[in-house]
Image (cartoon, rainbow, N blue to C red):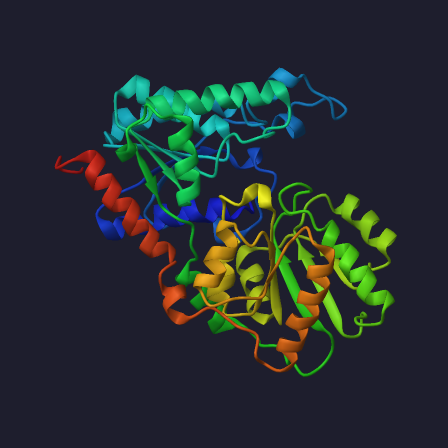
Length: 404
């Protein structure tokens, strides 16, 4: 199944909603549509009805010699899921008579499905955008961009309510769609799952931190625009040339970064392939264990994403490990970290600031003085608490009608 943190957010909504009086029905794609489906943490939530509809990944299952017609992957590679999901969703609605439809991005096709089911059934529809569907230069392909803008407009205008993960994203949409009333927007931030952390901590074999190199981990995808590690690589190369760091003292693990071939070439060019490891994806709980055992955690977020906060940031806070953040000082990510008591933050685009900040961070680790999140900050960001916020919204949207 998807390794994205957004998928974990949605799964936990489904798992915890029953605690707040709601019974979710999950409509998703058949397993073969996923790029990965070997993570045991993605078993269906207990007691939740899950319908898996027909859907294919165009790039993997409809391509010939790796090539396919562009229209087959518009708005995204899972466009065929619409064909199976709409009739399957209509059947679920007829059988179970739910009160609210909920669709979640980043698959644009999911909002198209939500729009169709809303029109078929007349049920209120909550669109979970999380992050913006469109932004300056995103999606980069002009045709895809136009289609995304159309879907975004239809979703904003057609949905009963829209959810975002940060105030700045909500404000961006409020400016973009000034005719939409302010009470149509809500914020439900990302978070971490306490249950998963407790389970991992109970089985975790701690590593001894007094031997070997310091281990810093980045868990999740990197993007050349939004999370470009190139300035970090350059900083590491210069620190190595000046003998401030080496493989005996520092190891950086980039877990499930994507584009491994490209990054491997860059690491070789910078001469730091023995310091930076490109590690494959792993099951979610194993990834949490790696975070908990790391000496420090790396967080990358560029200035063009100042209105977003990576979902992994909340898991980093809960891991109670020191965080070295490469981000814009003015962005939402930096604000979250500072409010949580973490000041080890450098500009992701400033090689010299990264060099100085990394040396300071490593020194703080050696002195056992690197800041970690406060207990108060951690408690505020659990996924169970976020689900409670969603349940309150569902109560408001559904009104006082009795649930099934």
